[in-house]
Amino acid sequence: MGVEPSRPEAMPDGPPLFLVGCVRSGTTLTRDLLRRVPGVICPEETHFLRWSEPFRTPASMPPHTRNEVLRQHRAIDGVSEDVFAELLTSCPSKAELQRAYVAAFARAQGVNGPYRWIDKTPQNIYGGALILAAFPSARLLHIVRNPLNVVASMLMGRQVSVPDVHGAINYWCEAVQIAATLRKAAPDRVMDLRYEDLVADVPGTMAAVLRFAGIASPPGLYARADAHPERDLWRSALGPVERDAVLTRCSALALSHGYDLRACVASAAIAS
Image: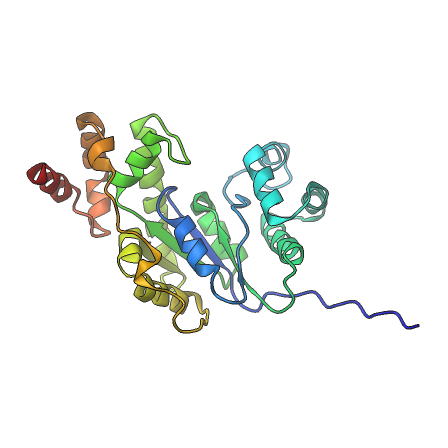
C-alpha cells in the first residue's frame, strides 16, 4: 500500500493589502466586503506591525503574549497558542511573523489553492513606513471617516473606549497625518478611502478598491444595500465642549479629505 503524497501548501499569489487608519472608521466593514472575493483571506486583527519596539527585544513581546484580545483573535483564526509560540521564536522579524501567521491561518482555514491575503489592523498605520519597506509590493488602504463621528464613537465606548476627547482626537489626527506622509512618499501604493463614499455606493467604491489592490472579483458581488447610510451619531453624542474641540483640532485636516466640519455643525443646528 503506497504512502499518500503530502498536499502542497497553498501559497499567496499576489501583493498583500493592509487596511489601516483610525479605529472606528470602517475597516471592519471594508474587510468583510473584501472577504467575499473568492481566494481572498484575512485573519482577525494581528497588530504585528503596530508597535515601535524592535521585534524579539524584551519590551516587544508582552503585546503578543499577554494581550487577551489578541489571544481571542487567534482562537477565532484557528491558530493555536502552541503554533503561535513557535512562530514567535522562529521568525526573525515582524515581516516574517506576519507572513508566517498568514500561512498558519490559511492552513487552519483549510485553504487549498492560491490566495490573496489582507491584514486588517487599523493601528498598523503606525508601522506604515515599515510595511512599505518590508513588503515591497504591498498596498495600504487608508480608511478615513468624518472625525465628528469617529470621536463620538470612541467617547461612547463603542468597541474602543477613549474617555478623553483629546485622546480620541489624537487617534484620528495621527492616523490622517501619517497616511498623508506615506501617500506623498509612495502615491501608487497608498489609497484613501472615505467611509461615507463606501456606504453611499458599495459597488462603485469596492470596484475602485479592488482595482487599486489588483484583485479580480466576479460581477455582482456587491449591492448598495450592503451598507447603511452614515447615522451622524455625533449630533447626540457630542456636547458643545467636545464638538468645539473636534472643530478646533480637526477642521483643517478634515477639509483635505472633503469634510467641512463647520458646515456640518451649522447644518445640524439649522435642522434642529
